[in-house]
Every structure is written in structure tokens, then in C-alpha cells.
Length: 284
Image 1 (cartoon, rainbow, N blue to C red):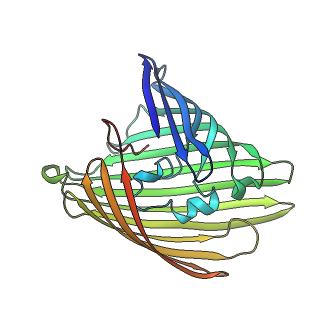
Image 2 (cartoon, one colour):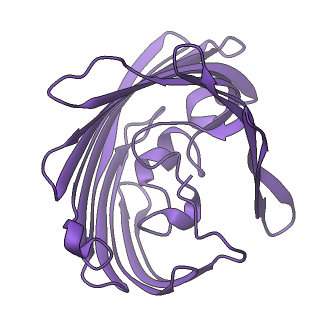
């Protein structure tokens, strides 16, 4: 359930609630101000954090039914979100006619892969670069760095990420045909009780809109266990999505997961997503 409103000329509030099997959970709930000095936007509250291209997206807006495996293994089952302060601005300079955005965030994060237990302070910085390559093509490259400490267990975690996206969308057929390619890679560096470990993970994703209603897509995942024994997982998830209208879509998806310890897992999923009210699905 999404609740959002412009409160006054200076600020806007957004609240997103998730209804689980036995409880209701706040996915996000934050207030933000725009037009501050230096063209800064400030967010305060609980929000999804700008890791890569997809972590900010709500679950219903993803090109597949679940977050990439590297998000779930390095940050938690629902990706990374935190309670705190976020500052965002665009740089006043342009490299090769690009647009450059910066996020700086200080949050309290609950992440078992990063900290083991409880909430801990996490600092995050992100630089995102966007270029319009032609009338039909644009590209994006982002860099993310984040980390924090759990002093109770002498655990420190640092994550570095590099992501890229390329989209082709002809202006005369933008609602009927487009192709988006994504690739993201992460390094998870941890030190616990004097033991230092460095692990890697990432994914490649493709989504091809073949008509106004049909989208074909697939994602390949690979990730190494962030801490502990050095195991790895890889998976592939092909999907077919049919948009009944801008308010309803259905998706048929297959999932193959191969774990070096637990073996393989195969699933077939049918997903139905709908939006009630005057607004279509929001990405984030």
C-alpha cells in the first residue's frame, strides 16, 4: 500500500506498507525537501538506498519477481534500506555532455550479512552518470561505496559496487519497443575477529519489449557467500510479462538456482500485479 502527498510547496511525504503473512511492515516512510541551497534534496526517515540500479525499486516494479541474488546475499532478503538522512544533488559540471548525480547517506541499517545482529550505522556514497548517446539510446554508469561496523562482534563490512545500464528506445515507438541491458558487480570485504575475507558477486539482466503488452527478459546471477565458508551460487531467471493495461500485469517466470553446497532448486512462478487508484505503478 502506497500513501504519498505533497504536504506544502517545500516538502513531500511517502509511506509504503507491506502486508506479510502474519504482520504489516513499513517498507518506506520518509519526508523529503527539494530546492534547498546547492540544489540539494534532503530525505529523512526510512528509505530504500541507492545501491546499483535496482535496489531503490519496489518489488512490484522489478523486471523479475525478486531482487538480484547479490542484493539478497550481501544486504538481506529485501535488499538494503535504512533509517536516517539522505542528501542528493546534481553536479554543476558535465563530462562529455553527461549528467552526474551524487548521494551521501548516513543510516541505521539492519543487515545480517553485513553486521550479524541488530541495527548499526552505515555510511553510503554513490556517483551516478547519465549520457544521452543518441535520440534512441542512453547509458548510465554508477559507483557505490558503503560500509559500517559492529563493535560488539568486532565485525567490519565494506561493499564496493560498479553498475552499468544501456537502453534503446526509439522515440517513434517508445511504448511498443525497447531494450534494456544491465550489469552490476560487487566486492564484499569483511573483517571479523581478525579474519579478513573478500568475496564477489553480480548479475546481468536483459529486458526486451517486443510490443506494447509483451516483455521478454532474463537475468543471470552469481554470488559468493559474503562471510564464512567460501561457497557460491549461480542462477538464471527467464520471464515473460504481459501488461493487460497500465494498472495490471501478469508474469510467468522460471527460476534455476545452483548452490555449491545445497544443490539445485527449480521453480515456476506466476505473478499478478495490480494498482488501485489514479496512479500507475511507481518504480520507487
